[in-house]
Image (cartoon, rainbow, N blue to C red; front, top):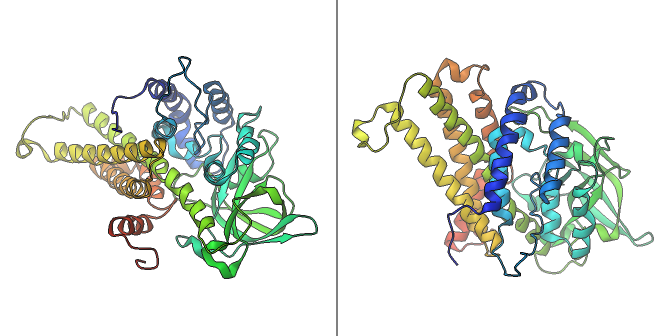
Amino acid sequence: MTIEFETPKPIENARFMLQTVADNMMRPISREMDENEHQIPFSYIEFMHSAMKAMGGMAGSLAPSEEKKPEDGKKRPSIGYQLLANQLEMLSWGDVGMYLITPGGGLGAAAVQAAGTTEQKAKFLARFSAEKPTFAAMCMTEPQAGSDTSAIRARAILDEATNEWVISGEKIFVTAGEKSFNEHVEFGKGFIVVWATIDPSAGRSGMRSFVVEAGTPGVKVTKLEHKMGIRVSDTAVITLDNARVPFENILGSPTVEKTTTGFKGAMATFDATRPLVAATGVGVARAALEEVKKMLAEQGVEIRYGLPRQKLTSIERDVMDMEILYKSAWLMVLKAVWMADNKQPNALESSMSKVRAGDIVTKITQKAVEMMGPLGYSREYLLEKWFRDAKITDIYEGTGQINRLVVARQVLGYSGAELR
């Protein structure tokens, strides 16, 4: 199969609609949301929930909706992840922090999609089409287990008398954790997906994920982080103290074998979501690039395409270099999500797109601030905000360093134990 670069009509339509949302509902309040950390833009959330239901999908989710069967009965190539990448890029162009609080399944739904049974998917993913906006989150990082997810200490013990899992541990840096777990009258019943070990002696083989529904006794949101960027998005600390979860809420087999099945469930989630997170960084990069070109045009500076490089001004060369970075990153994202849609292994391309996006969004937003001087540094414009928002792309969903390790292992054929 070959990649088609002509944008499918459903993606064009989705981008057009979300451009309107970004222009009219995100950009006008972007500064206000940044300066009032954790304030909830209810009108945006309610509108997006209604819009996503009308579209039959979950723009805020990192799990693609089921595609409808064509009326003519002919099989069409899947475009679910490609559609999501385009949706996320456009929403992040509007405001990446607000995108992160768009109602939908987020990483929690992605984990269910990657490792859940048919029954679990039907039970937990259906609630994102319910009457009220609903959120989900993934709880993996711990104080001693960041990039090294195999070091997770959260424990899940099966109580055979009640046939329930008893989970204890602490999870940090949980994106949308507060909205997903705390019960709000304005929102539907969400859930968090908690990674824990059912057998510490088994290492990675003992890792499993569990769906923990909002309001479960023994689980508390104990802190909301104050951050440099994406400030409207809640990033929570969640503690679990003998929290009881139904047996059937485990994602994957409850039997520990001499395999890394549980760990591979986490990695499968990342292979699907890393290019989508990369797409959000590309959206921020495009926002900064377009704003710089607009501000230069207002000052009468024209970018003269087609001339030999030695005849261009320094500013023209800088803008063109930024455009090259942006377009190369976007092409890598498109390849990774195309492979996901066509069910091709994409661990290499997924991590490559994440590395590239984390690099280019930081460079482009920094250069944008630099080129505009005092105007770029001023809070009168959004350039400095995008600079602060950008860096998270290189940190969450696997740091740039960890993803470089993944790429090196894939290219050189080494295992994790052989190349650390």
